[in-house]
Length: 245
Image (cartoon, rainbow, N blue to C red; front, side, top):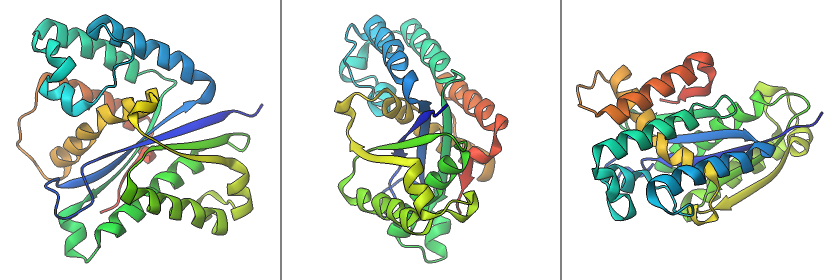
């Protein structure tokens, strides 16, 4: 039976060296296409319960700062309950994750341009996703649109269409048959996977700093629980997190 699996991509940090972020990470959320409506309904129930608006768009930066419609999370009990339900959803076995990360200081030291960071990150994430698909699976790729970065994702996709992916043993023709679409959306499109990806970006970067930079930074209980979730997911399949440099 043919199963279609959708990869939704979001970023955390910026590749530009002018940006203050120390890392650039891509977060890939993979679900079966038929699971999308169930995931959307589950997410809507959580939104309705805590924010009285099932159409509200989850932005982690606003949630973390408790601003705008998320100022209700200043109630500590409400915040704890919200994240308990969100983390239970994020931990669903039907949701799979892929991550890439670049340490920008190391990248700059060896002469990578910011476009090199973007190109290699997208190429690696797509490789990880495609190589994980079974022989009968079909794939679709959705990403939150960024005018500058869309070009490089498209280039990576077109390169695989022309040259295939050696690591997967796929020719260009086979890649084209397997990956049936590439779509650029924004959060207003209400894709539940894109919103979920946005919730994990800061945490994968924190995980890197704690484990590879011996960071002593403090983090709250929410991030602690998100780290536990990521560690569980990554421990099951260590191939789903690639540190490019």
